[in-house]
Amino acid sequence: MTQEELKRYSELNNKFISDCKRIAKILSGLEEPKQHEGCDITYANDFCLCGACVDWSGDEYWNYGGHEYHSGSFPEEYLTMTDDEIIAIVEKENMKYDEKKKAAKKIREEKDRAKRFKQYEELKKEFGK
Picture (tube, rainbow, N blue to C red):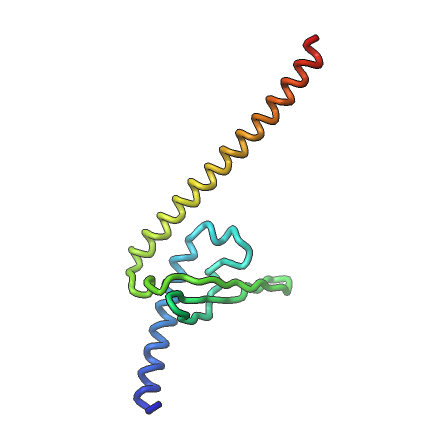
């Protein structure tokens, strides 16, 4: 590499890291990944462009001496998007996640109701006679 190429690489790498941190800050508003252990982008500090994705990783250090490793990825297209475009994606994904949680809750409630009704029917048979 020439000195000019090294300088250009350094400039582009600094811009890449800066943009990745900007995106990570916005993506930290996603609710679903936070529900999975080791997927909180809030702690991202290492970024690598790998194919069509940007892989990220970082460590969360706890006050009492432990730590947790976090990692994940986001599409490389996010690097070309504005903050507003990424915020819109986060809002849309959070709405989908909220709908998924509500549907799962409804299914759990229906199963619980069916179980209670079955118990009711059994008690009715036992004590109704």
